[in-house]
Length: 362
Ligand SMILES: NC(=O)C1=CN([C@@H]2O[C@H](COP(=O)(O)OP(=O)(O)OC[C@H]3O[C@@H](n4cnc5c(N)ncnc54)[C@H](O)[C@@H]3O)[C@@H](O)[C@H]2O)C=CC1
Ligand SMILES: N[C@@H](CC=O)C(=O)O
Image (cartoon, rainbow, N blue to C red):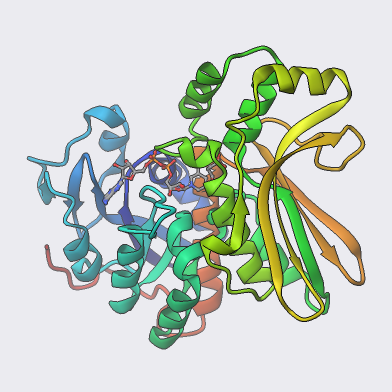
């Protein structure tokens, strides 16, 4: 059985959940999937960097509270994240990028992805910044290096929205997408309806692992703006920049408005949409809408999200599932690794190492 060695960049909620999955269920997954997973490097802004080409023992790291974790003083550890040298030099097969999403320029995640692809490593990421702002260039770079760039978790966490569109909609013309694409704001709107105040609802979404490190992106719609760009670019063949997508979040909606609307049978939802016109141009926007109860998106509650695809032959096809959550998003990374395996299992980049490859420390 082969094995993939992983470098985890960012060790917050999502990558820790992936490490937990590997630590607790690695043997079952290996039996089921036909390949093993091993973590050989971890970097994190707060914890530093840790490299062990023989495989990092994950259990002690996972037993430490996230805020108390430090790699300084461990063998192969450093207080400094050392992202570039780790990404370029550690002999990992796959770089798993899950640092903060930066909606303005995608950095530093964009550089992390670029360094990995330049060094001939596959990349999977849940980070929306690089995908939305430079997806086309990164896919081109990946193709030139014959490696994969996978990003299922960048839209609707582990719910396979991008892969469904890519693999299951062959022969269909998709004319538009409309959906609820942010777990945090959807959770918050539901809690406001239940009488919870905004700051408390935000704190709950943070504790549950749904919110961005800076939840402004969730509240002001920038997170959905990036997801609409990704969907429009991937599914509708657009090449949207951020300024092309009108964006209004939920911050101007008061708890009273949410409750008044509910009494009238309306539900406030933050809706992202993109429509392709006959001339090929694509309009996209993000804005809150008070939806009537019979609208298909009105019943999508809490961290659940949904995207409706408008197609020529099937009419509307809606995919619904978790839009946020640490474990759910870690599953997106696993699904990306499976996609990498499926794509490369017949070629040289498939895991072929029953024994450890030659290694060096950074
Ligand atoms: N949590 C969720 O439900 C989902 C998250 N995402 C995306 O996945 C990514 C990770 O999300 P979470 O783990 O929830 O976030 P998080 O905030 O829990 O973790 C991010 C980690 O990255 C580290 N980090 C930040 N900048 C870094 C740098 N320059 N070098 C090394 N480490 C750095 C931080 O110290 C932190 O530990 C984000 O981009 C987020 O937008 C995507 C879908 C769902
Ligand atoms: N903060 C985001 C996480 C997933 O992208 C959300 O709440 O949807």
